[in-house]
Amino acid sequence: KMQKVGILWHPAVIPIIGPPAYWRDNKDTTTTACELFTGSPGAKHKISVLQIRSPLVATLMQDFFDQLMDFIEKHKFKEVIILSSSYAHEKHLIEESPFEYGASDAFHATHENKLTSLNWRRQTGGGFPHILGGGFASQLFRGLQDRKIPAMMLFKYVSEGDNSPDAKQMTNKLNEFLDVLPTKEDGTARLTIPPSWKLLFGDAPPQSMY
Image 1 (cartoon, rainbow, N blue to C red):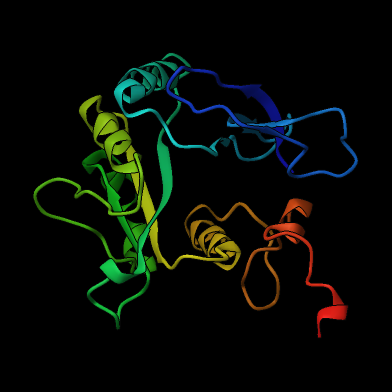
Image 2: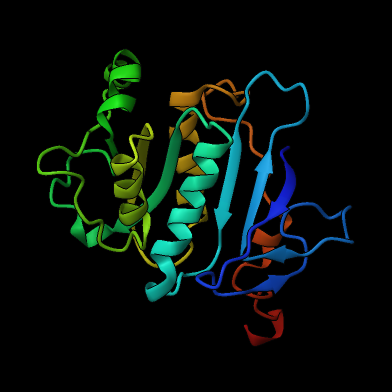
């Protein structure tokens, strides 16, 4: 369970607000468009998570990225991993895994043995391509590359609709690399599902309609 330690505001971030997304017992907090989480004090692994829940205004996006990368450099983050997705119909090698990744040379050199052992498919050649459906992730990745900040972008080809199974699979795939979450007997991570997911598409249909 990570702790929310900050809310990021920038004119590029389209504002949203809602009730707590994760913990029922913390009713005094709200959920906003861009929030920063860290592990508990004294945790074995020093990991921070920035969750961006809304689109960015295109004309202001680069300034947001510049300030974000300034923050990363100022606080000496060792490396950055971006999680994103792409349209399922853009996947041309249908027999391959739905996951692919791109990594800066510095990141890949540091983790080459681990990435090779995982046998993940890497996007290569001509710089990291634009990920259709991936929003602004590719632009942020290129900015990190330009600043020589070690970075990896992991993405999954997904379909429209309920993407909660994709989120679980993404978490499991990331944990294969980071190995920071406890796992079950089948090797998948032990996850606590946010209560907000239960009504992702509204209430269940009334029984009287059947």
